[in-house]
Image (cartoon, rainbow, N blue to C red):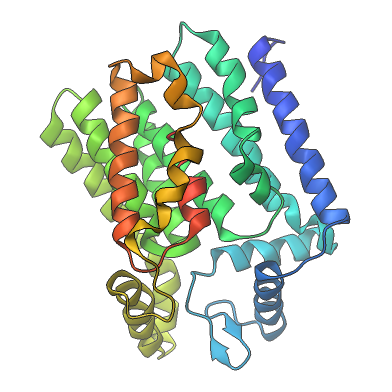
Length: 316
């Protein structure tokens, strides 16, 4: 992975050390409260009842999220035998985000080594990233899936094997938090074909096909449910968790402008930095993807602050 000591490697290990300390403090000191407690109770009941397909909270099926996060939590319990070590998954995904961010900057800016040195440190310095390090929630895994998809997207032009990495990252994001991953990866793939590919139509169709193939991964979860004679749960999941969130038929509806206060946090201090306004393709690509995702998320009736903030770390 790292063959010699370089400034890039030192910066990565320093940022990884910060993440490790934060995860350790969260595991030893911070109490498990709020959503973490709810997810832990759901995973514990799945483990005790040997019900691996349909999570339950109380006597009701929990259909808000796919079960991948709960499966990972159960695996950590079975292997580590110690509750604090359940932060191992958020830690691994956070470290992977740091590594892929640095590799992506090396690939995009091969002549500017300072960017590769600073990129993991800048990521660690972001409040939204730090706030979710060590917390066992869906958002860090979703961010990792989005970043992995974008990383494989850029590498797929020079190495075809990364195309399947793009498919796998989308599949993992789908099994993590449902189709919300496509709100980010579809614009990333389409604008990538526009800005960087020799044939826009050919590569756009290719990447959209990859996204379609990744959607088939949901059958890993759905087919056993159908064979068990509980297909009505899938219908309920689609109607209440996908259509309802998009149309506003939910209990909590937020206005279109709900994300606007985030703009200064996302764009500052970058707006005051001269190279931000240059006309390089990568800058135009990032702005195009960001604007598209921001508009689509704003139009959704139900909004999640963490999804927006974490997933936009890549564009920053």
